[in-house]
Length: 200
Image (cartoon, rainbow, N blue to C red; front, side, top):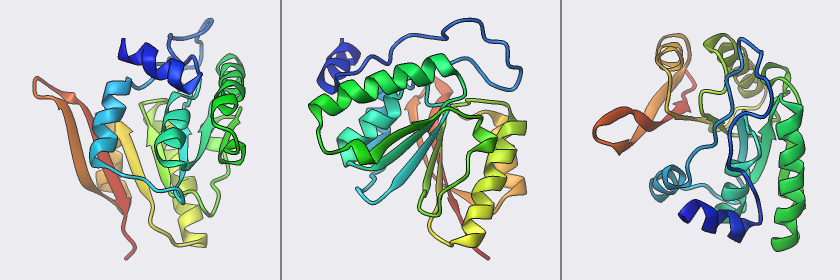
């Protein structure tokens, strides 16, 4: 019920699962983050209008529109599936009819995550297990290269984090966990982990 209300308010349609046949070993099937989970996250973790957020595996754009609505943040969705990218663009056009003058703050790129060039201003990166840890490592390398060129506070947001992602961040990167937000006591996997880059 609440999901339908939020979708109507934003003027978007982001529900549903994988479109078509999914045949990429390293990229996982689409599943949007539930709105109730996003509500829980952003009740405890605030963004600002100056933050620039990248959502890897953005699908139809749910996180992007919700973040822009809540915080007026800059958001970019990276989606390799052309069908989802097309749906995200349709949602963007519909969203901007309700929230005019925000068009410069929401964009989508149809490309592989590891090929996306990190902007010197992007500082928050969201992952809902969109791909294998091998792709994750390549994306993290790109983020770290960007940080070397332009030092800034950078944070990684993981939803339903895989043990592979956690192990990699904890043992092979200068990122350190700063916050954990659990959704259910009985399911320890359904949580958000926030990591921040520490410069040495």
